[in-house]
Length: 94
Image 1 (cartoon, rainbow, N blue to C red):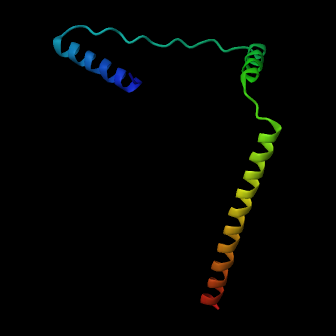
Image 2 (image 1 turned 90 degrees about the horizontal axis):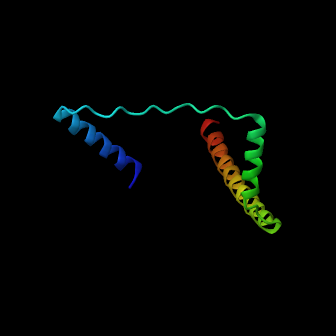
């Protein structure tokens, strides 16, 4: 059951109770939680970082290569478009 469905069900329930004249239950307000301290934050960060599955050196190298190739291709494409439009502008305006 999705959150939206639950909210819709609650709205329908409140609407039907309102139409029937029954007092609706008050909606509980959320309490603000106290801010955590710096030490607690650092402990939690360390704990989360221990759960991270870090990529291997081989994976990092292959992903980096893919990114470099993709950036090079896009750069060359934009350079080509710039040259074509530049030539076109020079021919039109000169």
